[in-house]
Image (cartoon, rainbow, N blue to C red; front, side, top):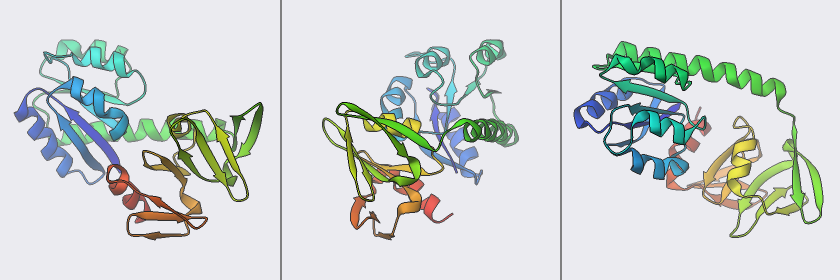
Length: 230
């Protein structure tokens, strides 16, 4: 499931994109925004797989937005003016949609995103080791990914929970969300990342690992159960 965020200062343009999302089975709408600054403030919490952004907006242009976000989130530009196309591609935008956007063109853009993501995943799989290094006190420990059951974020440190060991480190949870392969690990709460294959059972909105009940918050609930249910 591709989770998206929509940004456009024109309500009618947003409604059209929302309609296209509802007609595309592979896409889930996380949230729509008419103000790109508000969107920026919520991206870390939402963690979208792609952002559809208009280019001409009074608070912040799509190009400015793209430069702030960088390569962290794939971006698809939407605009009524085709003169921005070249600049969009120079910014490594996934696609450029000219308004009014048809359902067919919207779905073609999703196809481009899927192809690009698949290619990047293959590269990552071929280059990503099956271990990480963790700084803990005065040591740097090699930790096999297969040994990590879950990671808990505290106020001042993070704990990696292994079967027979707990490792404390000053790295934040966001660091591990970024470096751990999403095929194996998933963030389910502002304070927890879990290894999906280590789940023993699920009870209501809690995943049980090593007998510990780990909450799945509302922010991550749908994505979590979509993945659990296939």
